[in-house]
Length: 307
Ligand code: GDP
Ligand code: MG
Picture 1 (spheres, rainbow, N blue to C red):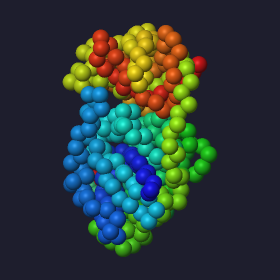
Picture 2: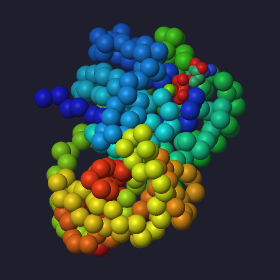
Picture 3: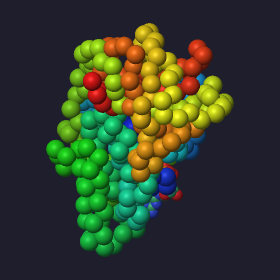
């Protein structure tokens, strides 16, 4: 059976994510390895819903000689964050798109940090809009900033591959280094640098305290109408086991600053430390629902076991 690899496209708004995904799709289609999806088809991403939480996401499918890829592109930053926390299939690699004209921007940093928290194992960088930057020094400086962000975010052991290109030139079918040659390079790197995903056999041993990244549903998504504070004691559902737990610490999760916060509002992204009443089978990377009065008010992914 052909291996399927799931990819998520991350990066600041307008840095060229959708253009890149459309360029990849077009390139693969010309080689008979995809049904081409145009930019506007990808950009009009349909709504996906997991336990009431809605976000826009487009799936673009293509093949190489060795694999099948399912690359996700979300139209907005909030969609990307919701996808990382609540999306059904964990991504095997992130494609980080950074515009060489702007360098690192807030969404680049927040999404990279979150991808590391939810344990996406591989990062490949597409340094986009290289057609607009003449200065080699500037390109090198942006590349250094990207590498140091990746190291700081928890990818210290390797240097992530960076492909310089112009997604727009590639989309227009221009056969040049920054054009379709950059897409060929991406494909080769995906095939060679991203290991085959190993089927995930989580060793669930019982634990009582953990850290998690969470999204708190808005009222329209079935969530609370009022904020809560540290010490709040909802129910936590792991698969089918439900148990009361206390939110002992509350941190900002939607910003570069991950400092402690007093209250969490519906619609917020937060990081939490939870102490359950009893031990429950769990492991890093598993998702859970937070409930109050029998309805889901939040979704999270375990990022660390404390004890
Ligand atoms: P997204 O928000 O990250 O999905 O960004 P888009 O793919 O929608 O691109 C944002 C804008 O940047 C659009 O106007 C694109 O045409 C433009 N763009 C994308 N890639 C390139 C590129 O390589 N060079 C130039 N000059 N413009 C680009
Ligand atoms: Mg887009």
